[in-house]
Length: 299
Length: 238
Image (cartoon, each protein chain N blue to C red):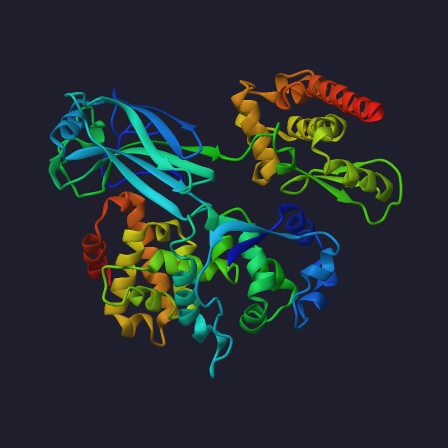
């Protein structure tokens, strides 16, 4: 659900209209998750005496509306006041991890949940003076906005570099350099035939996994970061956001506290942070490979 | 028998192929994946155990779409409870089923041309609309969204939903169709007014109904409504 900036047949409190003045609807919503659930932490606040009173009596409720475009999930959760607090509610909504994934929209409203005769909110625009409104179940009284979240259960580039990078054999080249394609759901690394053969023989060996990540995944992540940096807009909005690798890296950047990649100087350093010290891990892996080879030689 | 799915790399590789080049493969009688990916393994086994007859109806006297109800019921009985929403939105599963297990059905129900390969044999896109177009995913989702175990015939609303593709298109391509209460209310209304929605002016009337719900959704949060309130509203506007 995307909230449109529009006019309603009755006064509605929102950030963009002056239907109801000197009043506030302000919310804060954030997702946490573990393997089984998503947890939506919320803080919902409304400052308007009439609406507060209607929430207190149960004639109106805060509604958190969740919609996942991927899994046909759409649900409105009614949030009631507790402990006498009517203008500021905090809490958590739990959603099973197998219900939603990827892009999920969260909108917050205050809606009438029963018929309200003669609705006349305080601080109503003078144009409405003398008018009394009749609200029905579901009528919007206050509208906040829609927030989009990208939810992933499985993204962990340290363990799952292959979840965003695909190494392919380039059928047109026998030898040469690796090419990277950023236009698909995964970052595609086109390996010429000779390199692909080496890659295939190495990837089945778990002891060499960290070395491979450093050799191949790291530069490809850098390429991806450069692409994001060049195409990004405010709030990581971009046409590339429809691609899985793009959303995964942006998600990781956000979790690392990188709010705007355009202010970052070194993509090389950023890629190392994403992959969590790949050089160190590769060095350890090399030492272990070396030690096991020496042990074999002694036998 | 365990449910299988395609390996992500193989799915990506297959999806990247040029449709013109691939068309002859899709016109074959037998599935082509094993040959296409040889010697690599292109699928994996999930932990989901399936029991019962997995075959879909691949013949009917009339239009192949007339078999949809029967096949929705087969897929829903086979997988309805086994899959979560997240699993049922996984492109790897449906692509495998379209290209292997249900190859014969796919070729019969969705004869291939260049345009249909991406939309019917793959999950082409990141939203639920892509699932409602995939040849097998649509059968699961149609069953999942319309199944109502409070009815004597739990597939009663499924039948209404499958009367014609305009209904599926108009109800699922608008986001209110994702809300089960609204969807079931609308389908119940259609069933009650079958002459309007299953007759000669069905297309225009289905569109009019979908627009009416959308307009109502502009001023109220539709998700607050009970099924009775959805029916009352439709009674007023129709």
